[in-house]
Image (cartoon, rainbow, N blue to C red; front, top):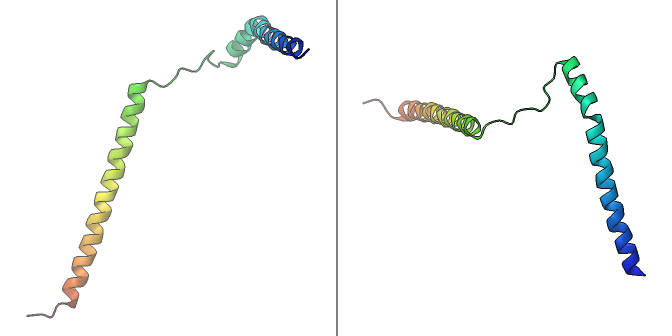
Length: 89
């Protein structure tokens, strides 16, 4: 008896999948017309992998520059404090 339920569940899942495909196919012209009327693209273009890598490299360089500038400012401040503590010769 359990085998019958497994079979029924399988065929219900398959039927649901095919119903979904049927709806998508039936509504495709409506979707296209709505996208044309609203001025939206049919499918957003995925960002190319090379531009994504370039963006990440630019961000990494920016972070590196900020860290260098922060380190220079900190070291400069520390030098000034040390010089103010040293006795004048």
